[in-house]
Each structure stands twice: as C-alpha cells, then as structure tokens.
Image 1 (spheres, helix red, strand yellow):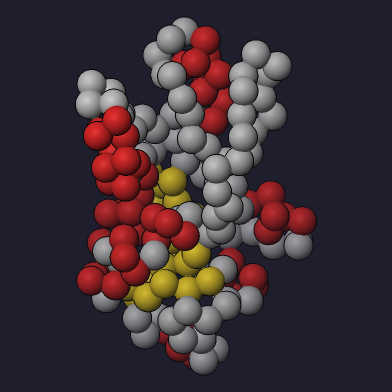
Image 2 (cartoon, rainbow, N blue to C red):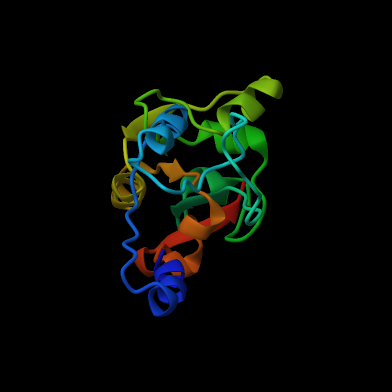
Length: 166
C-alpha cells in the first residue's frame, strides 16, 4: 500500500486509498453499491459488468520462528522450501475475512490429500500478521501470507521470524 500511495498521490492528490478487509464473495456487492471503486484480490470469476486484469503474480510463503523445532528437526532453513506434509504438521495462524477456518491454500492441500490445523483465525490482514508474529515464539505456530506481506522487508525478520517458501 505505501508504494501504491506514493505513486497515486502526485498524480491524483484528492484520491483516498482505503484498505478494507472483506470476504472475496462480498467484493462484487461493494462495487455495485458504490462502496468501492477498485478491488485488488486473487483471481476471481467476475461478472460481465466488471473489467479485470492481472496486475502481478504472487505466491504464499511460510513464516515461523527461527529455530522452529519441527523445521529444525527436518533440517529446513530460512528461504528453503517446506514439504507439504511438514507444512501441514505445523499449527497455523490464518486470515479469513469471512470467519471460516480455511484459506486459499486449503483446496490445494486437499488435492494432495492433506489438511492443516488452524489454531488461530483473524478476520483482517493486520490482525493476522500481528497474531502470527506474537504467537510464533510461544506456540510454535506458522502463517502462510502472500509473499509481499510475509517477506523480510515486511518486518518479519525484525521479529526473529524466518520466511520460508511453502
């Protein structure tokens, strides 16, 4: 959001950028009701009246405390890939705007015959990130945010949290 604001402000100083957490199922209603002018989300099946395009490609990463016992026991170091079964064995903190205890990664895991256990579920991005970093040390949990949110530059490394590829 900071880079977007820095790009928009000089050319459209009266534009206000507001980040809202809503389930993906609600975004079309927000657009049709005039409560939102633009939506940034994962790829969605959009109605014909909505213009859409891919802006960037992103992936999920896993953030966990440095020296996480399960990852250490498997010899997995920061920035290394985590096998799906190991990823699923780590208790998860997830973000779910609609309150369900599943996220975008769960259908892919189900396709592999796997599932993860969520121990905490937050309804907003900010809450889920702070919850994940706060509980990672004490509860040995992990979080799988989009790479742009969980990258070391997003502050995870300053909290002793390792970023790994999932």
